[in-house]
Each structure stands twice: as C-alpha cells, then as structure tokens.
Amino acid sequence: MTTLLQKVAPTGDVEHDKPAPDRLIAGDPDFTTWNLEERDGLYAGIWKSTPGKWRVVYDEWEYFRILSGVSILTDADGTETRLEAGDSYILRPGFEGTWEVVETTTKDYVIRL
Image (tube, rainbow, N blue to C red; front, side, top):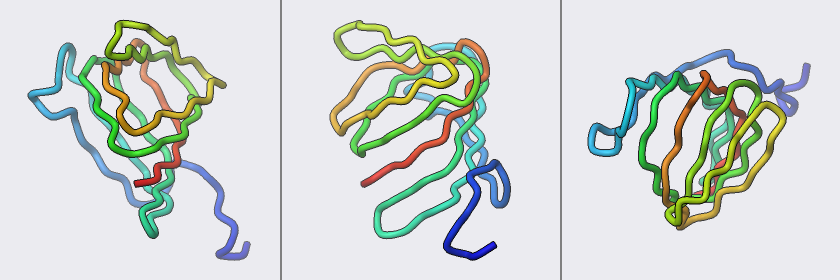
C-alpha cells in the first residue's frame, strides 16, 4: 500500500490520558488516543473513553463520527445531544459544555487548530 493512503484504525502509537482534575464532574474516565495524522495544525485519529463526565471547552474545530458506544454532549444552555454509533457532528470553536460517556465510546476525528 502506498504511504499516501492510510487505513483509519486504532494501531501504532497510543496516548493515554484523563480529563484535567478541575474539569472532572463524575466517574474516572480513561482516554485512549491514536493520533494517525499531525501536520500543519491538522490532527486526525481515533479516540476512546470509558464512562465519566467532564467539562469541555473547544478552541479548535472538530469533525467526529461515533464508531461505538453512547455519549451525551450538553451545551452551555443545557441542550443535550445523544451521540451513538453512526452519528457525525462538527464542533466549532467556542463550544462549551459537558461530555458524558454513558457507554465506552470510540470516535474517529479530524481537528483543525
């Protein structure tokens, strides 16, 4: 396979993280991230989280598609959006609210800083 074509799969270098303690609301979520592409302010890969809830603030633009699991994204006004396998969304800079993983959730993403 050419190096100009890459399968999007959870392989290669992996990062493990958690929400910042001051953003954590509930649970003890673990994040696993496979960054498959990083160049010129563009990031793409796969992210997985175990259940929990934390505050989010987006300074970046992000497209994502839920591959598995269930999460609830709540905006600053309290509007809840249930995220399930097959759902695709764009989050724009300035979004604030909470992300709650109800069932371990995996998503692929493209982020533009």
